[in-house]
Structure formats: C-alpha cells, structure tokens
Length: 346
Image (cartoon, rainbow, N blue to C red; front, side, top):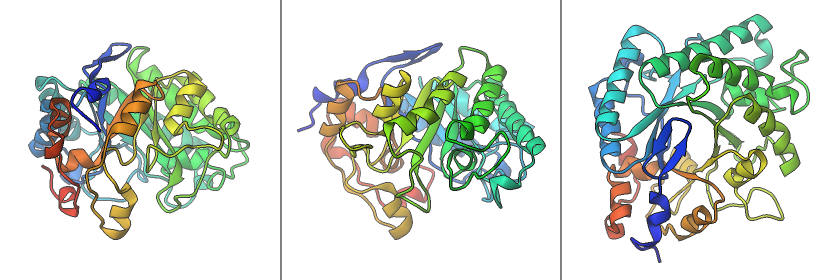
C-alpha cells in the first residue's frame, strides 16, 4: 500500500541544463479556455500559483497557440504572441516563480483545417517560423523551458502520421521523412532559445478521435520517428498515454515513455490516469468522473528508472494540494475527479 515513505521517489530533485526541479511531479497541460482574446489574466496566474505553492515541481501550461490563422478553432485559448498576451504570461511566470515553482508553456498549433497536404512549402516554412517566434517569446517572458505539442492529431502529429500526411514533397514519405516538419520546428525553436533552454516534445500514438491509432507498430518503427526528433534538439519526451501502466509493445512491460527513454537516451515523462481509476477520455465522451486509486504501480516503475518525471492532470484539477498531500502521506485526503473539477479555474 502506498505510504508517505514509499512516495519518496516522486520527491527527488531533477536537473537538466539550467533547469532544476525540486521533485518529479509535473502538472500536465490541460486546456482551460479562461483567457479572453487570448490573454491570460490574474485568475490564470493564481490558478497556476496554487499548484506551485503545493509542491508541483514543474507546471506545463495549457496549450498556447502560435501566430497562424489555423492555429486554433476555439475561443479563449491563450496566445503566445501579442503584447497583451505576453504581458499576461510574464505575470503568470512571476507568480509561479514567487511560489518556488518552475513553469513552461505548451506551444500549440491545433492542425490544418483541411489537410496538411493543402499547405504549400512556403506556408509550412512560415508556420515553422511562427513556432520559433513563440519559443523566443516564451523565453523572453521568463519561462523555464517550453513544450511542443506534437500529439493527438494536432499539426505536428498530422505530419508524423501516415494517415494524415500523404505529401510527395520533402515533408512526406516514409516514417523518417515524415519527421521533417517536426525536425524543422524543433531546430528553429532551438536556434531561437539557445542550447540550454529545455525543449520538451509531447507525442502520442492515440488520436482524439481514434484511440487505437498508432504511429508505430514496433519499437523499430518508433525509433525511426524519435531519433530524428532527439537529434534535432528535444531534451525530454513527454509520452501521452491514457493509462500509464499499459505496455506499448508485445514482449515488454515498458510503457510508451519507457520506450522513448530507451530509444533516445533522453529523459521521459509518463502520464495517464495517475492516481485515478478511470482514463481521461471517458470524461470527455461520457462525463465520467474517477475515483482515487493506488500509486504503487507508478512508484515501482519510477524507482526502476522506466521514466524520469510523472505528469498529473485531472487530480491537480480536482485538488491543487494533491502533491502536498501525497508528500505528507495524507493520502486519505486525496480528492476524486468529477465533472465539476473541470468547469472552474480553481
């Protein structure tokens, strides 16, 4: 059974480049939509600060969009461009730092409105530059690194996946060639922020409308995708899964984060129903909440080095004190996740 002593693996420091985290707990990126006209206000700053005050080692913000007409089809999604939005983010960063936390933005393009094949090479190059501009803006705002959203059939993932990328130019082809867009984005961001500013890449097999989709059917196919991204400048791979305990390929108990670490040698973040008994998409499709569950299996994998960091999503929506309670052994006080948890900026 999980006890205060057994959770100590979660509360070891982690250092990469000029980023030092006090523990291995990451707040997962979760879209909130509380930024009118793309500008995060004091309520957003207070929301993130509460988690930093309560032992979250690293906060990854909700997705922040780049400056491109197709980047978002939702209202009140925060921008990573424009004077007012960047001023708002600078205040968010200041509040998190004042509480002793670290914070990085997730930089996002939600995907082609039609098809990635519709973009001409010149427009693709403009989008790459928009990612780099957002990265530079994030660094100027005081963030501690950045995450690129390359999962869930959003734009970067659309280029990676054979079903959405059938281009015949340099951005299409076999698995390695389909990484070209992502590689160019990563390299452009690296040039914009310098060598010591951490770049995280979130990737997934599953898509928002297809849980069975796979970029790679075997470890060898995954290697063809991840190694070019690693060489381009990714420092940490954030492997988005719906259930962290599920093995990714037959013949091994490793989850997707474990395979990313094994293939690239880079640190990895795991995520997916940590501390809960129900997976995330059941909430979106059916409005289902989730009860608190044991952390034992997670801790065993972390202790043996399968991954390095653990992203917590819905539990931190339900309870900003989740990490503090776990650290102090107040496990009986942990809060279940309900639909109400997702409807406020608490």
